[in-house]
Image 1 (tube, rainbow, N blue to C red):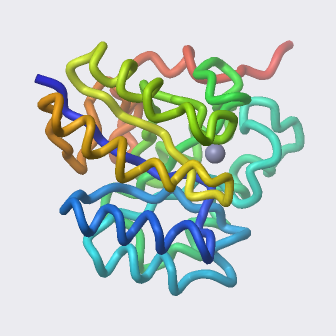
Image 2: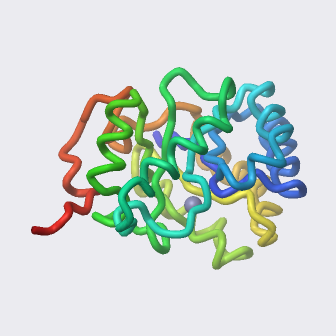
Length: 215
Ligand SMILES: [Zn+2]
């Protein structure tokens, strides 16, 4: 029996986020939107709507330019998180969800640096990773088959998709239908194995996800 958790990163987007919300609502599925502060500034109504419909809102950095583990300038990583959290404001879940990003969706030590980890633990954040990246941004037509294959290879799948204007989210309806046909259950919460920090407390060796300053 496979459970699937859906998450949508890098929005909100004025065209794609409403499409995703409508698709999820039709299927009765709740998810999490990991938003960028830079986009949230002018598009907060979309996040408010997602929140009102029962979805969770998480922090995915302010401008998503450099993975935080590669952010060399002191203060940069903390600022990427803090500015976005301020914009999320009262839409934040009590667990204060934060998702770092890696180049090409790869999980490695470039996700976080020491400053980011300190900021997250002090701030009581919950760090949410993932275990299925079907590369919807690169395969707007092919991601559905790939995602199904990856999800059914594990008992608890946490899927990263993107509410970005790539055309990929027109396949969301088909993905959900096919996954349910094959017996999957959709859940909103995240598998514990994808949570290295829960409400500021380390749950797993964080060194796997963190660059340490040399010297
Ligand atoms: Zn991202």
